[in-house]
Length: 127
Ligand code: SF4
Figure 1 (cartoon, rainbow, N blue to C red):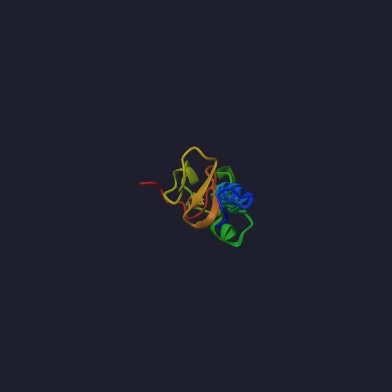
Figure 2: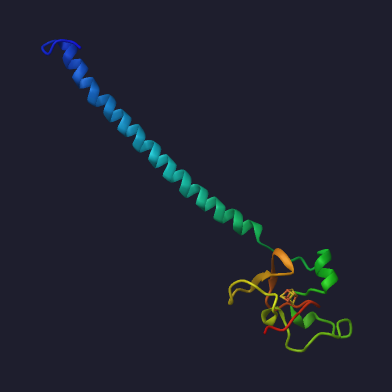
């Protein structure tokens, strides 16, 4: 270590806080970066989830097989004699998700949303 009166000692002392300060500053910047990255990841995860939830296409093979329609008024009762007047997705046991939304998940169409005003031949009365 340089002598206490030397310029070298002064430079040594004055250099320490600067490097300590630089280390603290770089730690602070790293933490800020991590916080921003975490916030960004949360936002993109929300965006990705939103993008994943598609509505059931009435032309999908499963939708066609079940006679799914987006509006119950389109049901042909001759083709689907099991149709119960007043039935729709909104009062079907298979409907999931939050009441009040126009489109909600259905247990039969995994990962997709059906119209609450819709209907299909798998309709089951709520209990
Ligand atoms: Fe609608 Fe029920 Fe058919 Fe799902 S199973 S599409 S909720 S009628």
